[in-house]
Length: 315
Image (tube, rainbow, N blue to C red):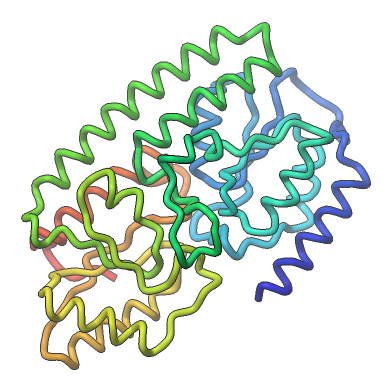
């Protein structure tokens, strides 16, 4: 799998290098053409850019950025963009390296890499890299707002005041969201504040809001969990009597179901507390189709299940 991701990245790099100047299609307005990799980044850019930007997000609902392979259409969009915003911190795997090299020919911005290094996780088993899932600590994601506003204002200085105003409003909303998450998670009995998911994407959430986090797979879904991993996690759940575990919208539920069956074999019944969003947001037009709505969905789903308030088991 890592081989075809690498080869796909090389092909993308070759095409972009051959025509990365942008402007392949005629412009019908003066808005900035923006390409974002993930939905979270795209939502942030759209909120700050308002009607001055035309934003395309490459990775839609259910897409795993760790394994993402750019399509021919994506290559065209990247080539024609005025600016590219991406998460960075190796979330986009080999594609991130290509985007970094693109920076010599057109503006590319890794929004998460503006976060101070001392506030990033650097797990021992992640090959010396930082955990890229920074958006789950809303106070960290807030730091990306000024980065986006600054770059848009630089590229479109006549409308800089508008970018600053929208950035301030969006940041204020994130402050409210951060406070909401802290209050809701504090309602969970302390012993039950344990989040068990398919992969280890929620460390920032755990640190920010006081939850112990256990993921079956590693930080990148390119790693695979083995039988021993399943049994170890099942033993932990049964011993601690954790009431619920969670599936993720962008990760196959098969591994979590294996954990559930292994817990059952130990004489304890754990329910699937619901589907939460990790590396991708929900469908456009739904509450979880925005960053704020996605975070609220996760907070409410996790809190209800760990408090035992879920009305029925959800798959």
